[in-house]
Length: 339
Image (cartoon, rainbow, N blue to C red; front, side):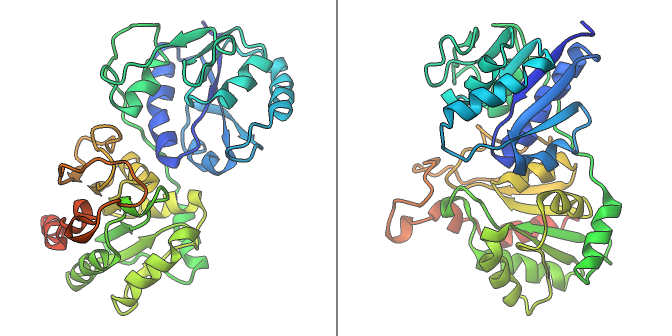
C-alpha cells in the first residue's frame, strides 16, 4: 500500500478543483501513505498549493479546447518514469485520457465520457440519478466499482493570512474592521449566473452603513462590474477586481467574516475557507453543484424555467433573468443583520 502513487487528471474550473479536494482527502483516508499528484491547467495550481494532500502539481501546457495529440503523447511519455500505479481522470473528455495512456499507467480510472475505450481500462458508467452531484462523481472514482459512497469530506483550503495582509498593503489598503463582507459578483460561465450589479451595490451600501468593510472580488473579466458596484457605493468598497491573482484572492478572502457570491468558483473557495456563505443561484442547479459547507445559505427560486444551464437567459420581457432578478436585495440584507 505504501508504494501507491496516483496521478489525478484535474478539472479546469476553479469550483470543480475545490470539490476535487474531497477526493484527495478520501484517497488519504484509504491509504495515508499514498502519493497524490495532480495534472491540471496552470491557473488552478494555487488551489492545489492550499491542499496539503497533494504532493506534486503538474501544470498542463495545452490550450483549452485543442486536441494537441502529439504534444499530449509526448507529455505522457515524459511522466512514464514517475511510475504511477493509477490515474484518475476527473474530466470526461477524450483529451484527458490520452496522457495517462501515453504514460503507461497500469490502472486508468474514469467515466466512459467521450468513447474512451482502450485509453481507460477501469471504466465507470455514469448514472446521473445515482450520482447527481459533481463532488459525488469525483469521490466515486476513488472507490472500487459500485461501492457505496461514504460520508464525503468537506473541501478545506489552507489560506495564508499573512500573505493577504501583505498583498493589501501593496494595494495601499487594509482590512480594519471585525466585520468584513466579501462580494463575488462575477461568474465566468455567463450572465445567467450573475445577480445584478445594482443589487450587489444595494447590499454593499446597507452593509457599509451598518459598519461593515466590503471587499469586491473578481477576475480581469469582472472589472467593469466591480467598478460599477463601487461607484454605486461612492467608492466606499475595496475594489479588488482584476487586481489579485487567484492565490492572493483566496488568502484575502480568508479575512472575510461573510461572503455573498453567485454560483462561481469563488463561491466554492469561500465554502472551503469555512466562511459564512450566502450563495445565489440562477440558471444553475444547487442540487448539482452546491457549496460544500453544511452552514451555507442557498438562495434559489426554483422557477419552472430553472435550471436552464444557459449562459444567457433565452427568455424575454418580465421572464428575462427572473430567476435572479426576483431575488430581492432585502432578503440578502436580512441575512447580514443576523451577524
